[in-house]
Image (cartoon, rainbow, N blue to C red):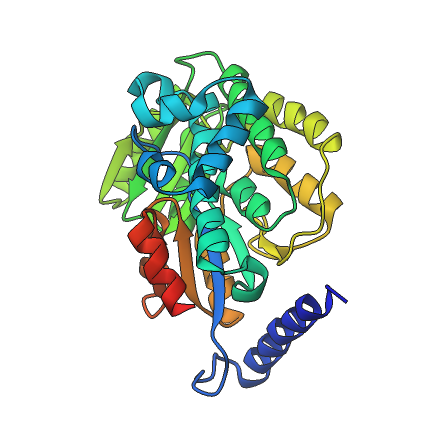
Length: 345
C-alpha cells in the first residue's frame, strides 16, 4: 500500500515525458502540478561553522550530527563547527561533513516542518559526493552507512594519486565539446579529462598536472575566457581515480542499498535510477566519470521539473539558473530558510 503514491508519481513523470515527446517541446504548465527536485551540493561548499546554528536550534539537526560522529568514531561535528579550516578541507572530512549538513537541513524540514520528501519531491540529485546525500535523503542509504562510505571515498580518492602529480582546473567560457577537444589535444599520452560539466560555460578538467597545465595554455588559444587552477588535493573524476573506484566497488557491494523513495538522477548518466544494484554500479562509475550536471538539469527540466530545492548550501542554485533560467530555485541552509520553504510546499 505504501508504494501506491510512489507509483503514481512515477506515472505522472512518465506521462509528462510522453507529452514532451509528442509535442516536440515542453507545453505550458498552467494546468499541470508543480514538479520538484531536491538537490544536494558537492565538495567546495564546506566552511567552518557549518551546521552550528542549526544544531543549536534543532534537536533533529543535533541527532544527525551525533549519529555521524558515532558512525565515524570522531567528533566531525566539532571540526565542522570550530575547525581548524585545514582539517575541514581534508577530503575525508569534507565529504561526510557536507552530507551531514545537508541531511540535517532536510531532517529539520521533515521533522519540524512536517514535510515528507516522498510527498514533495519527484526526483533527487546531487553533485559528485552530493549524490550520496541525495540517496541518503531518499532513504536508499541510512545515515551511518552514508557517512562511512563518504569517509572511505575521501580517503581512497586522496590516496589514489600521490600529492603533486594531479591537478584540476576550471575552464570558464567553454562548452563541453570544446573542453573535451582541448583535453584530448593536451593529454599527449597522459590523463586529461572533462571532470564536471557544470553548465553556463563552466567545465572542470582533471588529470596529470602537466597535462592539465597544457590544457590551460591551449584554452587561451581556443578562445576560452579564463582557465583557473583549482586548489584541490587530488584530480577527481578522471581515470587516475581507478584505485578509489575499486575501493568503492568493494565497499558498495557490502553496503545495504534500498530503492530510493523517488528516483535519483545519476551523475554519470544524467538519467533517473531507482534499482539498488544499478545505483551501486553508477556510484562506482562516478569516481572516474564525468559529473554530467548540466545534462542532468536539462533532463529534469524536460521531464517537467520546474522547482529545485538545494539543501545545505547556496552553490547549485546559481548553476541551475544558468542552465534553466526559468527554473524556480530555493537554497535552504538556516532555520529561517527552512521555515520559509515549509510555507511554500
